[in-house]
Image (cartoon, rainbow, N blue to C red):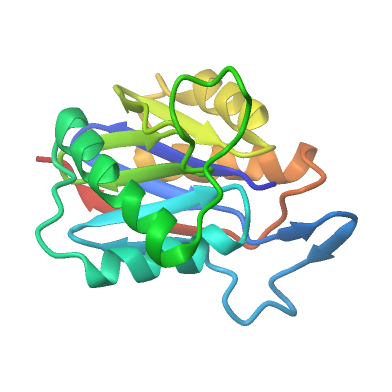
Length: 189
C-alpha cells in the first residue's frame, strides 16, 4: 500500500515514494510516523519496498550485514537476491509460501532499486526487471505510471520532476498513499 517510482532520463536517476503506511483500515501518516521515508541507501544504491511493513527493517538489516553485494546489472541483482533468500528464511523467519502452484519460494516483497547502473525492480520470486524510462510499485502504481507516461517526453522535465509527478498522482488518487514524499537523485553511469 504505497506509491514508489523510479525514473531514468538524460543521465539522471530518481527514486521517490510517498510517506503513508497502512495497516488494514488504519492509516499512519508522516505526521505521526517518526521514520516515514520509505527509501534507504545501501551498497551504492537506493531501495524502496512495497508489501509488508516488516520488510523495511528486514531488508535494511540484511543489507547492512552482507558484504560485497552487486547491484550493477540484472544478472548481478538476481544473484544477490538469490543468495539473500536463504538468509531471509533462516535469520528473519520468512514464510516463503504463497500459492501452491508457484514454481519457486517467494521472498514476499517487491523492491525498486536505483543504482548508478540503472533502474530495477525485484519481485517476489526474485524476478528482476531493468527499465529504460520509469516504473512504479504499490497500490498507487497505475496512477503513477500513467502520469509519468504522459509527461516523460517533455524536454523541460528531468528525472526528479517526473518522479515527483508520478508520486503526486499516486497520492492524489490512491487511498493508501499520501504526501509528503521523499525523493533521491543520482547520476547514471
